Image (cartoon, one colour):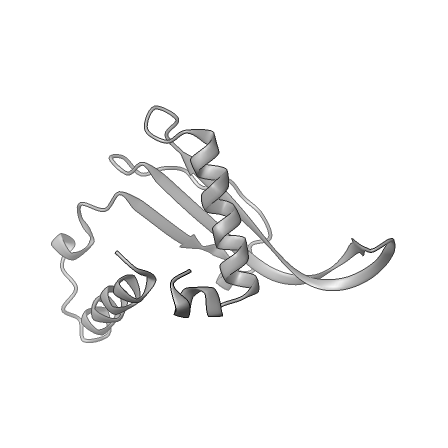
Length: 116
């Protein structure tokens, strides 16, 4: 499933929700959750897996933060993300690889459009 396929599915669910037609069955059977606490101002937290799902990605608010860059302190927008996953199903290497891809996609959304 590509990012575009996921986006189309999310659009369909959003339309159903806005029209009041979203059913429990539409939200059942997922294996992964994206939790966006950032819209409520959350700076950091550890998301908890909802069984039977295998992982949850918590995305938090974007805030200006001091960052070391080439030996200088500069102000950059920063967003903390947290991935909680079931180690019985997902190896740490794959989880970290996934987080690195999320970071790359947030920093350069063109990656999503090109499906790189």
